Image: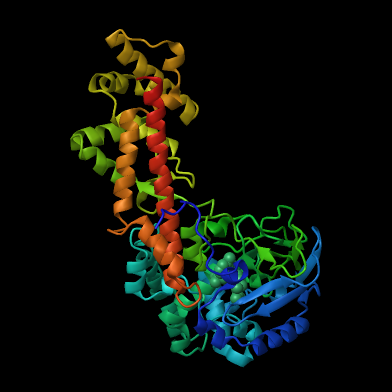
Length: 515
Ligand SMILES: C[S@@+](CC[C@H](N)C(=O)[O-])C[C@H]1O[C@@H](n2cnc3c(N)ncnc32)[C@H](O)[C@@H]1O
């Protein structure tokens, strides 16, 4: 078989099928009659959906929205009263949520569990009936499957960590709520399992509404599928000047602090309430018959799979990370541990660091295989000759510039002058100051290739071509977890392929110019 063109694999199904594919189990629980009931519910709750849109519940795919007439930029296609949204403020559990001082996504998950438990008695029953029991995100995949399918990927270990944190939240916040008796719910309706299910819905379909409501489920707005850089509509508020609420918000705590809508009315508890309707506005024309997409933000496949349970082929926002721990491991395979510690320390003293998340520090490799500048600088410092390093540590503080580029310019200039003077081999000022070239020396490029190999080895013994073959043979609908985990693996390994190519081409260019 000829090798695959990296970065391109054929779509296995049509793009509209791909966009809204759901496992069969969901389709069984969401027949079209539920869609009809939801439309009646929308009318009763003042939710207005333009006649130019059609809501489709195509079995076995999920709900998606289609244009039945051409849509033009600026068209208003939906209005949703804030009161129709299910939020920690609008739920009948609002008092208990406030008393327990629950906030953010946890508060919304309680609201969802509570209204689900009320069944037909809930004002959101017809809406909730339309939602899947749970979104197929890795959090709710069987543990052994998640471990096997995500091994080596950016989501490896994260799912286990998530589960740990959510179990803690449940024990600390939800169990006491059940035992307090304040909500008068059956414990089964607030079980850990139900909490996980609610969390998947919150992570995949909630929006930050405003400072009064916080996170909420926004009926109708949450029926649009996502397309990276290809959305037709934005979710917004008439009073939201910043236009910041155009996508589903994430479940991380930082999202709690995001800017919200200015509210003109005061609520009893002091917050100001905005009563203007939320809106969906067309931002890009759509043809009759086209699926109408929203955007959930620009993110790589790991984030898409983590929060929403799907991936996109050839996603330009994809990245692969190389842990600092992996860099030090590579370093100690060549130099001593003392060397590794000292060089990392100097790098830090120069004001550099990697990206951080929880307890990990890492470097990003972009979609086109380019490593983060901080990694190149660290490798430059690691590979400095001992005498240059000795001189550098004495003046490190004086070399710290206004930004990372200033600093690296100062450091490289100092290091090159130090080594060249000693060898009496100055190559001329121009050569000295070509920082980019100096950060791609043969030794640094060789380190990059070793790091690519080390990162690649995390995927196990099969090759990228093996994964590509499996992906082509896999069914997006009946093998959803396998399909999306393969897209994630393949996308990441293609980045590593480009990363290796990047390292090889840089060192070759340098060799040709300076034989
Ligand atoms: C906000 S909902 C969108 C409406 C959803 N299709 C439904 O059936 O209700 C988000 C979920 O839709 C699905 N989805 C959205 N965009 C998708 C896409 N481009 N490809 C595959 N699934 C997508 C994912 O399951 C995601 O968690």
